[in-house]
Image (cartoon, rainbow over all chains, first blue to last red; front, top):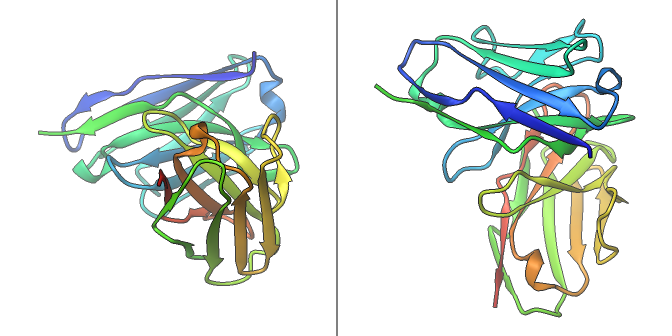
Length: 120
Length: 108
């Protein structure tokens, strides 16, 4: 069964850090471009970051550039999002997602989402 | 950055009827356009990519059309499970990737 299983969310104070994980199963992890997307409570979807097959290329939304870091461990079939200097406006459900082969920006498999609350 | 605008914000349609959702890009995105369905408490589900290609397992009542700046998602005969929020998203010359603000499809 093709799936992405997320972990690592929670409540954190402003300025602190948190790392999200996204473990893949049921497909060849190394063959796919992977993304992170978030959704603030009651709001729409916001793309955050993307990483290439081998992790050599990474791109970020301006809203998180310099604070968040995307990475992957192909030996563990796991994607990560390291979030630093968290702000209240980072409060959201965070999703990892797999890209369609040949259409690297279309996202065909999503994790279940993990809530991050930045709250003092 | 390409801005995506969806209309209407809310659409009320009766089961069995056709629903037409629109998405406009602030500049041409070619056919690099995807549509997603999201139900409360769930992750988004890819419906259409490449403007008109149905994703795996998506029923034929869902169809996408358009290119450049104007796109349409049509649901030919609404089923009860189709009432949800729908998002368009471009992936042309990215990053960044941007989503529309969503259209909520309600039961009339």
